[in-house]
Amino acid sequence: MIVAAATGCGGGGSGDALLVPVPLTIQASGAALVAFQDGSGAWTALDGTAGVYQATERFQNYAVAFGCVAADGSGFVDIYYQTVWDPTGLDAACGDPPAPATVPVMVTLAGVPDGQRIDVWLGPAEFDGGNTAAVTSSAAFTLNAPQGMVDVFADTSSVGVGFPRATALYRGSTIDLEAAQALTIDLAAVGLPPESHSLTVQGTLPADDTIINTLYVTPHSQAEWPIQDEEVKPGMTDLGYTTVDARQRQPGDLTIVHPQLAHVEADGLSYDRGAILVIDDASDAVVAVPDVLHAPAPVLDHTANPRATVHIPTDPGQLMHVEYQAYLSTTGPGGAQSALRATISAHWADDAAAIDLTTPDLSQLPGWIPALALAPGTDFPWMIERRESDVADGTPRAAGQRTMSTNVIGPPKASSNASPGAALRTRRAADRRARR
Image 1 (tube, rainbow, N blue to C red):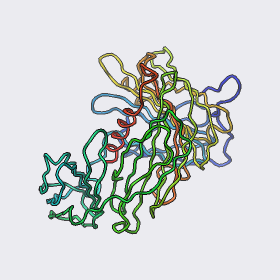
Image 2: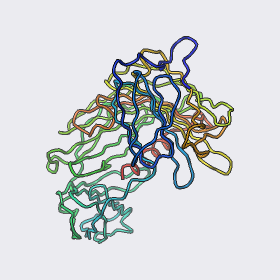
Image 3: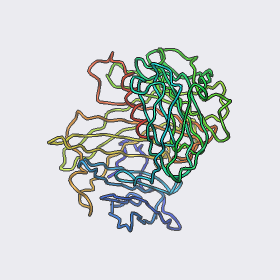
């Protein structure tokens, strides 16, 4: 059920009835449950064929819920609150996608400096050599890369505290992988030092811990290759980012500059902000992060299938596309995990000063299974976030794109003086794993 605050804010509701019904196609492979709400009407389960579901919008506002169960038995419910003005394609995939066909490539390395870390990428396939105690100045290994066109990338980096600092980068050629082949990379001959540029981050606070992330994308990378993960001192605004040397950059290559900031306030909650700028011809850059988002913790009721109530202050933002998200994860008896994510478009929120939302009880619908239910309690991980971008979600990377995000994360840390730097690094590592 969707509820509005007593003051009348909260957005949602049915919206106006449409003069002409609008068909909606939903892709949801492997879902245990797909449910639809038209306007503020009752939720109904949808029947699909080969992972394709059809619904009809008769009101401006609608919502779609997906229920997924992982191989380990953990459940996840994903709910989207949208309008006819939002992108109509909704895709959900439960479980890992089918593995692509791969081709074995025998890679021979040479010219790796002593005491350096080495990473080699063939498209999205990565060899992480770690410290050269394992990979000496020359080594050979087999890397199973996806069949088809892939670009080659390699880097060496210093090994120290935290994330390594790149010392040499190599943006290689495109290779067509149709059959097993061999590849030799002599880093001493082809590697070039990273190219550095000034980066100014606007909106930082003295208490912020900051990590500068730089990623690289090519026409056949099929992934975002990490170049830089560097923590800087609190309060610094004139920073820097690194990328591939101009002598190796090729048409269609993109550099993604992604500063992340975080601090813990007196309430013990972590307040994280970030921005993404996509650049084609690297140069000095200026990015702005949004204001800190303050929102209370979600509340779970005490019903048999607990529902979450969230309060999210709204903001028109600076960029064209704005959405809000609430996420919470609970642990039940025996350690069973269950999570819920609600994504709310700015159109659905309308002009409300805040979104007050209670998630639906879907337990009576066909396809519902107990693993999808949240566990009752008060001490659970949660996050409230606002994201804004100048392009719709899912749009391929292109030069000039900007994205900003601001979120608050609970439950409170044990000490309000705890540094969020470690949490930022953990999230950054998770981001890297997600791109592989």
